[in-house]
Each structure stands twice: as C-alpha cells, then as structure tokens.
Image (cartoon, rainbow, N blue to C red; front, top):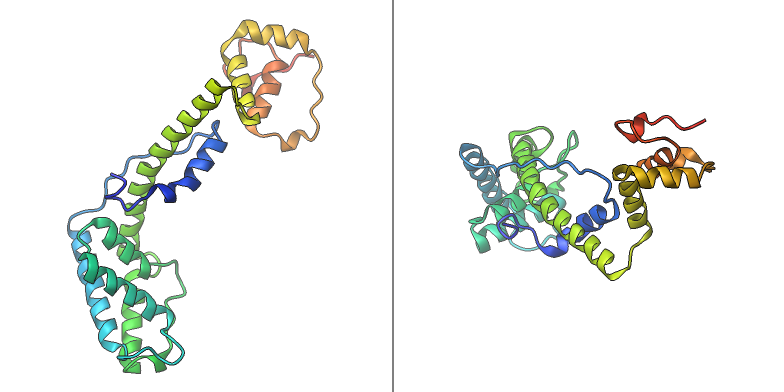
Length: 238
C-alpha cells in the first residue's frame, strides 16, 4: 500500500518522530479513498497536453542562463511520463504536484528562454488556470494527499507504539514516558491517586501557563479527589 501511494520509509521518519514524541496527542485519522474516475482522467489529459505543449515550445538546447522555473517543472513531468508512463497513480500525482501551487501568484517564466514568447504566455495562462489556487486539479491533489496521510499515520502510530513498548520492556523510559504513565496511573487507579494526593498535599507549579495538557492533568488529578468525570472538571482541594 505504501509503495502504491508513493511513500518510502525514509519519508515517514518525520511523522514517526512527531507521533512518538507526542503520545498524548490524538492525531486526526480519517480514511480517504484515492481519487479515481473521470476527474483523474480529465486532469491527466490536460496535464499531458500542457507537458507536450511546453516541450514543443522549449529550445533545442539549454538556454545560456538555464531553464526557467516552469520549464524545469515541465521537463521533469515529461521525463517521468516517458519513463513511467504514469501507470502508477503515485507517479501521476507526483507530476501533477509540480504544477499545483497556492494562489494567487502563478508560475513565473522568462520569455526569452522560449521559442515563441506569445505562445509561452498562453501556456503560462493555461498552467495557472489548471493548477494555481482552488482548481479542480488542486482539489484532486489534496484528496490524494489525504489518502496518503491516513496510510502514513497508521504506520507511524503503529511504529511509535512498538517503540514505546520497547522502551518500557528495556527499562529505558524517557521523560515523556514518565509523564504519560503517571497520568495513566492517576486516571485509572483511584487508590493510587488518593495515596499520592495525601502524600503530596501541596504543589507548587512554576510558570503554570507553560504546562502542557498532560502535565496539567497530573497536577489537577493529584490535587483533587476521585469522582470527577475528567481532569478538566476536577476541583483542587482547599
């Protein structure tokens, strides 16, 4: 599934690190099917047309000052089309992403690096209408990213869970683990909460505004009696 979505393990490390470092955070996970059908067919047809037009308008040799930004993107898309045929959806969407960007500023071109300046202007208008801002192509790409996000997050959460269990088994808990386990103990064991609350009757919290929700939960559970539905509704003892 990851390969079909164009995701490699190296690309997922950042997400894994974020999930592993924030075990108390509930990351949104909504399964999204990959785009398919007529919308994909129409976008592919237009993208191929833009790539062909762009390649026809480029000079035979590299301009003295190099290819401009749009030329580089179109040449990359043309190369991937020639090599892969965009048979894998991931290859097509990777090419589509080259021309999709936030608006309102469109793609820049340097007119004297094209065969025909007027036709180059027309190409730029077509490319911008196709992929810049809130276009059907951009919405299609966003749906693809949403599909990939769900796949990647599931894997990252699984790996983070395994990593946390490894730390627990090997006795190598980090500070975040200690906070998480302490909050879980106070949340689920009323006897432990009462005992620890009696042992630590007074709590001094420096810079309380800088505490994160997990730290605030520990403080409020320690400072109150069991019975409240959540730590947010806990009332500290006088």
